[in-house]
Length: 107
Image 1 (cartoon, rainbow, N blue to C red):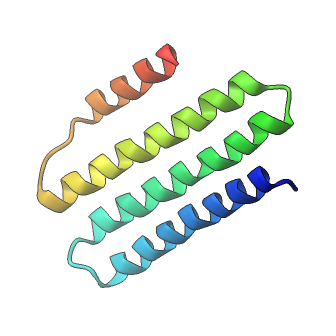
Image 2: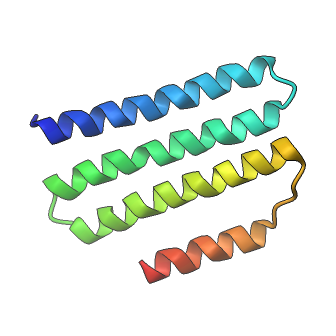
């Protein structure tokens, strides 16, 4: 394992650690649903590092590059849902899904 691989694995573990922290926060928080959305966001986005690792070690570079982008974007959209739940700002699922699909298509 070279240095870059080590840091990608560490980044993955840190992302999962944030996810676990938000799950724990959700057990004691008044805004449990928001914390769970944010935990899901960190869990999903952390898989971008695994995709980036696979870009370097497989022949399917384009597939894993798009997967890395998709997981980060999905994580950001899930954080949007969580923050919206926290502050009572409604979200349009159709708009988020459309934005996600168009972004992946453009990538």
